[in-house]
Structures are given as structure tokens and as C-alpha cells.
Image (cartoon, rainbow, N blue to C red; front, side, top):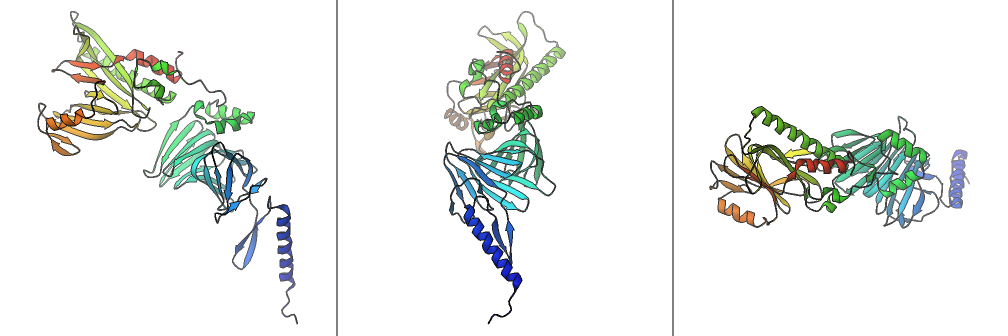
Length: 461
């Protein structure tokens, strides 16, 4: 005897069975997903699809189980995709959003209604959103707590490790965020995001910086290539040739072939070098110091040096010169400056009037402060030049008021420590007497400016 028969329940059962059979017949290529929600169920269609693969690409479901690759494979929340060396994966996020995974990349996909997220655990992803998102739509690329929100943009994201994300925008604008910090990034700009420091550094990049997995996509889309040029001025399909390291010969302390100096960095160094030269010239003119018997007038000298990982830094030495018989020396109004790139923008380190020496992996800087205290710092050249050891002296030196790593030390102790890393070859300035300064390894600043202008593309070789 049948009791409590419900025609509505029977109809639902028939429909569910019919849909399950339909999914089995289509092999899961474009089948809907039945997602349980409480006592009932809803049908949720996938809007993320692995539409193309090249090489060795693996897919796992939300339980970590392997998923067989098929044409237009539906990707659901919790699915992961990994590419091996020389392998790539193309993912459609609907009809107007495309992403491409670079080789050796690892991502996870998430979908919550109209909110799509790609979490990049490692590697790089190219994205091209051809239509601005609706108000109730979101598309984010994440790495840990670092987020890039995309609405109608083209560019790529790199995740070298779980603490950093680098974003490059070719067309449009995105918003990057980490912690409480959020910043827009426009076409032609890059963003270096640090999770631990919760910082976002905005910079620029060149057409030559676009990786091959990105340029190969633009090659197949002439309209997109023009849009990128119009938005950012970057012709990534025809980048300017990389400068010849020989340009730096004679003006670079280190191996020019190992330099990672970008065109933008060269332009920044040329700017600050011209600024300090003009400043010293004005000081010399105001002092009106002339001695036709011995003084040769103002001299400007400089040298680019390798900050340990190929990042460029710059020393400048300028002042009133005289011929000592063994070479020029600075006698009056001499100024020393040092510049480096702790991030995307050039910064001066140390202070004016210091003596400086560059060794293999180290820089020693020091001088007398306005209060009469001699202060020096030893910096390790790692691209981010940071104090390692300091020493201080009251009055004449040497004396017994130096410190090493915050501990009191005498001159002999400091000198022994310094001898452990001080080689014979060096780039340095040093003072001898009240009005006499030597410099070793420097070249005319005009020669340095010429090399920087060529490297930046602002002058012809």
C-alpha cells in the first residue's frame, strides 16, 4: 500500500535522474554541478573552463583527486591546476575573461556566485579581461593575503614565493591590496607587493620585460597589441634591443654583463647625478674660489657599481681640483654622494661629505657629523643596502670609542675585523688632512652620464 504519495517529489526524482544520465552521456565536458545545500539542492553551472593545454598539465578536484583532462574541462571551486616545465594551461572564466598559466605554475580556482578567484601558489598568470565587469561581479588573483582586483584589464602576475607578488599592467587599471594598504596600478606600471611588510611599491617596466608566455598571446591578437601601445606606450612585440654591456665598460665597478640595471633605473641615476653636479657647481660659483697657479676648477667624478645582485648603485665625488703631481685631488668644497635602489625608486644613502669605499660585496661609508662625531657604517651589498656594523668616534681618530654590532670596540679590534673583508681592489674616496681628498677608481662624471643616457635609451650609442 502506497501512503503519502507526492507527485511533486516524484517529478523532482525523475528530473534529477534524467540530469544525472545526461551528464554521464556528455562525459562531463559541459555538465552542470549539483551542489547540496541543506535539505534541497541547486544546480550550479561551471563558468571556469580549462580550454587548452600544452605539455604536462595536471588537474585535481577539491578533495585532491586527479581529474582526467578532456576538451573544455569544467573547473569548480577547490579545483587545482599545475603546469610543469615547458607546459601551459589556458582557462576561460566566462566569455570575456581569459587567463594563461605559465610553466611551473600552481593555481587554485574558487567560485562564489559571480565572484571568481584565482589563487596563485607559485608561478605566473597572464590575464585579459575584454569587457569591464558588472557591479555585482568580481575577479581577483590572490597569493596569500595579497590581492589584485581586476575589472577590465590586461597584464600578468608573478608569485615567486608565498610572501611576494609582482603585478604588471599592460592595459587598464587594477587595484592591489595587502593588509590595510590598497593602491591602483595603471597601464605601464608595476607593483611589488610584500606580505610580511604589507607594502606596495609602484614602479614601471619596459616592453622587453614582458615574458614569452605573455607576448605569444599578444602576437595572436593584433587589436590587443594596439590597445596596449595606446594605453601604456609599450610595444611588447617589438621591444627595443637590450643595451650592450660594453656601454658600461670603464664606468662600472663590477661585471657589466651581470648588471640588471633597467632603462628606468639608468634614467633615475642620470637625473640625480646631474642634480648633484649642478648643486656643487652652484656652491663653487658662490664661493668664487680661484687659484690660477694650482687650482684647475671644479671637477665631477663618479662610478656606477654593482650592489651585489646586479642592481646598480652610484658614487659621486666632486669639488675644486688641483694637480698633486701624482694625479688630481680635491681641495675645496668636495662633496661625496651615494645612491642605490632599495625599491623601485633611487634613494641617497649615507650623508654628504662622507668618505666611502666599495669592496667585494661591502661598502664602508663614514664622515664627521655636524655635531663633530665621526660616524661610519658598513653596508652589505645585497641590492637593499642595510647597515651591518657601525662605529663612532668622538674627536680625533683612531680612539677607543668604536662599536661593532652595538658593542664597544677599540680601533685595533675594528681594524682587525675590517681586514677580514677588505681586498686590494677597491673603489673609494678618502680624506687626508683638513683640505685634501683622494679618490680611487672614479671616472669623469660626464662619461658616466653618457653611458646612463645610452642605457636608458635617451641617447644613441
